[in-house]
Length: 471
Ligand code: FAD
Image 1 (cartoon, rainbow, N blue to C red):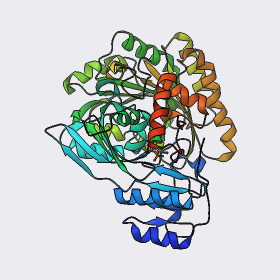
Image 2 (image 1 turned 180 degrees about the vertical axis):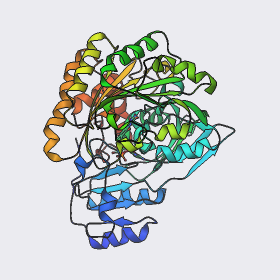
Image 3 (image 1 turned 90 degrees about the vertical axis):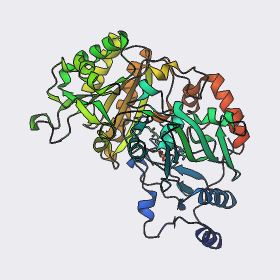
Image 4 (image 1 turned 45 degrees about the vertical axis):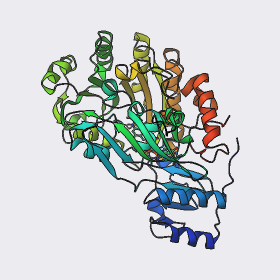
């Protein structure tokens, strides 16, 4: 792999020139605001100290930052929402090109499209699109960036109804390694192969400064929310979800089972606080009056606390945000499940019981529906047939718990491995090596991505990501 060297001392003349040539601010160690500017969501990477952080105000700043990085030989880390699990959006001694301040959006209500700048988070995009009663698939946590999540695939409440976030990406502007702005899309003067690669291929091809999404009518009120159960009901819950999925659950219904610890939230009785518990999070995005019947099988399990009901789509999108705020140490280990077999359910129940820290969670997502109907070669995201994703989300507070919490995620995955497809999902992948990156794509898609990488980034300037080696 060809990589640029990192350096921690910068030419002051070049730095002054950079500052003067940008609209957005530049931070270097010692500057007021440097520590805030370098902060990332995963505290495992809180120690990374970039030589420079550029907070881009627009496309011109991005172009100049890329050119500066290359002339100064700095490793580039690209940041959108800052939620990278393996800490890719920072760099020790390199440059962080942060598009986070770029938050403009324009909704075309007639065409049902939005053009959104690359620094938006999902709650910001939802806010703009819901003003028109429209939405596209985002993630389950609304503080993640639209850039990172969409480029990796994008699983969320609407995935079964509308497809993955990347399935609804219809165009993008990309600043490439040589500082050009390339338009990816399906128009005659647009680069369609690049668009294919952006739909799941991650941040490998350049810095995405804006994205166009196809929207659909959603809400503004949907039916859903969360129901909370004691841990003794985990098996029964998963069997119920399996029954619904096997019976052909409607696409408009998505269920996320979160085997966790009950938070000290005012809506939960005090006796549940801090004890193992199961949250079932549902979203029915079909006609709201049909929602009650749709979640009836979950309700029939007799939740200890039932918060399912009519809810603004924006509120549902933000429901889990307080539980997954920044500052914790985090690790994810995930895979696709062929089925929720009895054996897999046993392993999930055991894994939940063995959690080494209260904030460690197992997430089981229902897939299928519209996401499964997209042909495997229509985008760089090929894993269309698996009905479930399982994610061991290790989350803890202090470094002395690192070993136990990292090991827990790996161990539970190992016990489940025989039930998985073997595929990987880059949005839930740590630094697990090239084999797992390949497993995210399969050989055929990987080779196609490698050829596209060679065209747009032959020197692998953008390598702080789930990296595809240029062909
Ligand atoms: P950043 O750290 O800013 O970026 C991560 C990487 O994405 C960068 O290193 C870069 O390679 C690339 N990137 C980001 N923006 C751009 C851009 N504009 N141009 C080019 N490259 C870019 N995933 C799901 O699918 N569904 C979920 O429900 C979900 N929930 C999550 C909840 C939490 C709390 C967390 C931490 C993660 C979750 N994820 C989910 C995973 C998430 O999709 C990835 O971590 C994603 O990379 C985050 O994107 P970001 O822009 O916030 O991150």
